[in-house]
Image: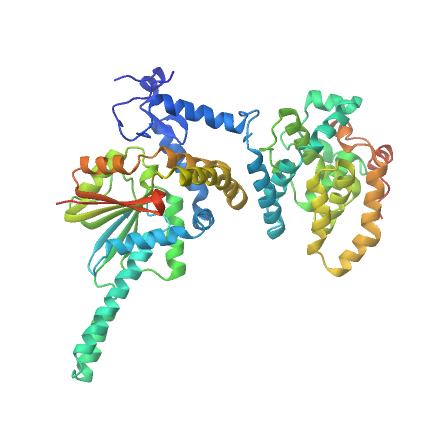
Length: 259
Length: 290
């Protein structure tokens, strides 16, 4: 056991509890959560906490769309049915299986930006870097998962987040509200993640009428068709395909050319 | 005296919420918590307590009942809640004094009335002063910004300092307050000794802090709310689960009413007493240096 007593603060501890009870309290705390930390950054949560988090993050994300962390939390707390299915899809596909094994990460530290920039126009690598620069975004701003209670599923959702920018590139959509909504529709059809469905349904709330029209008549139908037709986007080892032309990759996956 | 091997090697044992850490680690972690929450501190207080913390602080200042000319030291005063209430209270007392005086002096000449207005205007606080002392730069920064925004400038000063080792001379202050701060002090006994030292003879010590709920049903509900809802609020509003997990754990670790009373008496204070608010969710402890 741990020896607690130090003369320095005989009374400044939780005085009414003895050493034994404190340890029990800590164990009880752990048991109540049912789990311990499964990966760095993991915060175990009870079902009630997950429900409150889901509701709170949904409300906050609508209230302040710049709270990307809230969108991430919403995805984690509502994804527990869908994530296992996605993981299985990956497991049963040769490329997806390799991704699960090797766990590649898309981060500035792992990408060779200069090399990618040097690739020919129209290649995946070149267009991806162009997308990052045009929209002034970086792959490092993706939140690591906190509330997913399975280490492999945490990687799956992390992969989904890191691949999101590549989705923008493949779909040719910018990072403004309109572009994000279109990508969400595509992802909703592709992954079935409740967070994508909610984002797709509620995202348009903040768009102007003109944009809504374009969205409804052209972009969303195209996104849905592409999403349905395409194979699982998580099963592509993008890091090994930087030289592949975007159009060829689109064809291979089954994404229709953007309108 | 027994200490774990870790304790002997790295320093005295302390706790950070439910974790076991060294004293040095605890100070560092707590500093980081408040650095992280400073900007959202007030919003979170309102959300977690549904605004009731304002009432608790009002009660503290009313209990203090400061008269104009009082010199207050507000320790761990961070964002200034107690200091601003103190200033408001003293100002309103002053105004009432002014009105009363005017009523009694109905037959003054215009010149005399004018002069008395001039004199009083420059002393709207009547020489009362509050020094806000906090160990955390971020919290002080937020406090200063708030003061500017709300228009508090007179009779208010901000000092960076450690409750366990205050940068003030002996026997200086009329009142010492520490509201929701003593829980975060690592050596409470030292902080109490310092409080005793800097107070004038006759001075009053007031501590407002989360305490222990004895009613079992209420205690269960309070625990449920604390552990299930508050960290979620922290994540949603401030994007910071861990700091608010620390908050609720540190409340559970803090000594209950009677024990704190004994510690205050140990530091030399007399007539030590406490008042429970909301069945012990919060308590105000009071003592005098006599």
